[in-house]
View 1 (tube, one colour):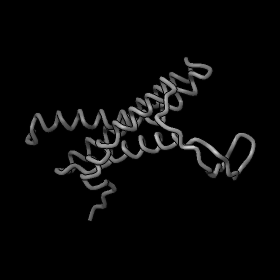
View 2: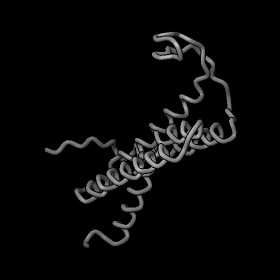
View 3: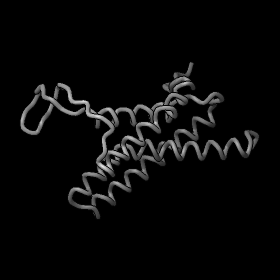
Length: 152
């Protein structure tokens, strides 16, 4: 019996439902330095600037956005299709390899050509890039497959 490590299909719907919210919050924070609300609370910092295992007060708004974006994209990317078969699994695998290669090439190019704080921003955005590229590539290839029909 083959094991599948994919979420049930309903998780794709959940991911698509929460992704726009976290994406809009992330864009507002990254490009306009605008947070919709402050969430200052005590957090455990495993590593801080000059200390380890410290409880400190911090605004966790950014962390919520990052976790929300990653979780929503994981739900979108790794939810089983209702008609999942070996060919769709192959499309999924090829799309994942493609996204890792493209994301890595873009990170290498950024490492060579981008400097200063701009590089920190690019490296931060790269955290989402591979999942984002995978979702786009997989859905494009899946739509092509479904449009041309399963017989070919």
